[in-house]
Length: 424
Ligand SMILES: *Cc1c(COP(=O)(O)O)cnc(C)c1O
Image (cartoon, rainbow, N blue to C red; front, side, top):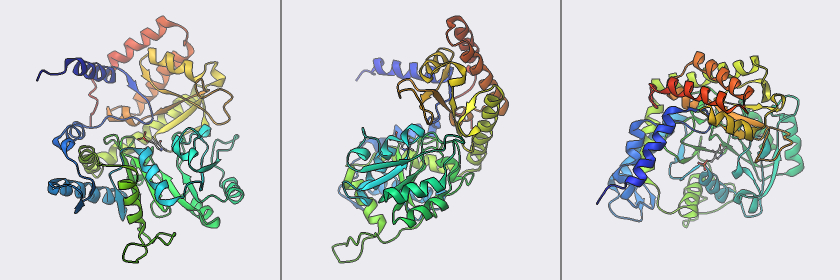
């Protein structure tokens, strides 16, 4: 068979795009070569519905061994008693948890989408908002921070069955102990979705949700730097609070409920090639070099946030504890949409983002979200991120000047030309 040049030329074009630009999308990263090799492996050919030792297909002895390694590694990485590495993505991990913990029409309470929450936490266009009754808590306008007394009040008004903590654009750490006491006070279950900061949480750089939340979900491709995928964990397994029984009349454990909600509840055959790549990424994250990496991610975010503040940019909450920041551009006379376009022309890949109490639509927005995980993988340090902030500031000041944006773009391409995507 002839090689499919049409697609492989596009893959090469994408490779070049990733090499030449400055990747600041907070949810992206550069996976290592061995993560990508595992993902492109023969495990893609294997059907393995079920779980290690209890599959619905023959020939699963190797897959079983591999999936067990993935499970052991991720449990060691997060200190989890239970993990499920099969969810295809963060969204399907959340779908499975909702299926396991909630009845259709149940009440969920999540982080306001327009304040940085995720679609799967109750958006009307998502299953979470269609099949469940959502309510939301948000940040305080004056501080940009979660106000836990307000969340307590909201929970008492709404009486949710499930509270979700975690977001896609919140730059501060989360008080899971407080969230648990709020959940307990209204009889709600508590789920943390740590899709964004999971790498920092794994290495103990941020608060640990596992001892305090009933269930924890995450993606594996953001700060965790693995393949695109999802993951469900529990710090400790426990009896389900719904009294559901096994065929033998024993009360089912939460792990049995969650496993059943992933397969056969919401998925068919697991993506074993992606699970192999997850195992490789978990192995990498257990190493000292990843600890160094994740500390650098955080230091870089603080350096870049400081540089923007110095240049009179309005950061929501004034700074960052993790890998990302949300910038309100209203004092700079440029919308999020225009900033995304102009910065794109200047070589910066970023995304426009709603800011809390935004007066513009989600297609325009008043802000941008930036993260340091990807460029830190490329080897950039604090001084480099100050330079990034400075170049972005120049681009934003001249956002309507095509020639100026082009000049900045060639400077970016020149700077990045000798930097490998994965430098660790
Ligand atoms: C990215 C993200 C997800 C969804 O992940 P996908 O893999 O894109 O489905 C879910 N929750 C949060 C908080 C996220 O940031």
